[in-house]
Length: 103
View 1 (cartoon, helix red, strand yellow):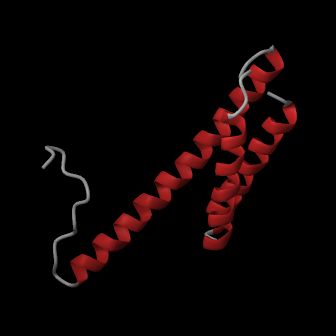
View 2: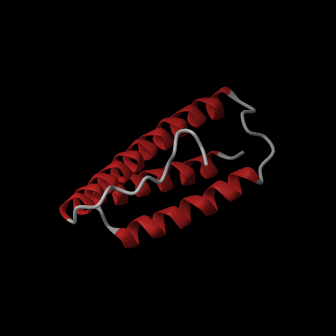
């Protein structure tokens, strides 16, 4: 795996984080598509951690991916709270999308 490919993955993660922080739907969509393409390119490679430098870069990418995941979880929770608040204003129970006991 080349360092250029890892740099591309890092840039795509950073762009997604900026888009999520900016609440820009079009930027989020574009960044998500770019990241998906970069991930597909990375998956096509066979040598994932052939050198210490690559392993270190992969750890940095894992931290960026976690930062993006935290933002997505936060935004998802914010949306859920808004939907629940609107349901309460209508006098309705909030819709459960997850049932702990299954169906």
